[in-house]
Length: 262
Image (tube, rainbow, N blue to C red; front, side, top):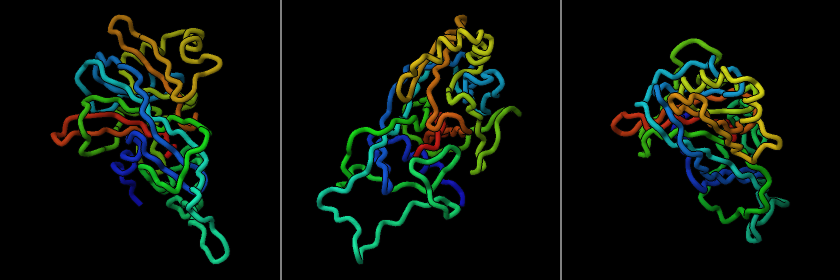
């Protein structure tokens, strides 16, 4: 079954959207991460703590400049029926479990590399009350090139061979061996690769680490101001695909990496 990229990303990039199954309720919120300098306009998605200079840029480029970076965080809470919603009992069928595309039960929360059928979605379903926050995970990373509505989405394609591989849906994904992610300029990542490990650890691996999105950044190429902002991926290590959004005029509006949380 082909994946509808637009539907998949629309449910990730909506402030306050709820996605819920019979055991969990996920509420999405956007967290601004500041700007990213792209002196060459060659965008790379990768784990910046694992071979940052090896991942090739995408075939789609953007004009050099500074662009806003956003993290979309899924806040998970136990789903509870309201007082007016009866629980299943004798003669009452329970809600059918969410299943993935192979027909198997989809776990909740989802495991890395698994994209199950969409959980039910609501902008404020009255049958679900929100209890104490249970978990926070980065669901997506968005580089905003034009703050305009996206009319179409397409997979982001690497410009050359590298560590990328095709995931189970056929999209090019990168390995996040250290559970970190970024969208940055190729020059910034080449500069970061030359850093000694001690400097990388001091900058991007504090102990304890901050909560999701765990965003940590630094200028890695002082000559151009190119910087790398790293976030924790939704399920830590795994493989994650990136997509390009275009405006109705066909101009690049955004790059978005999906961490397969929702």
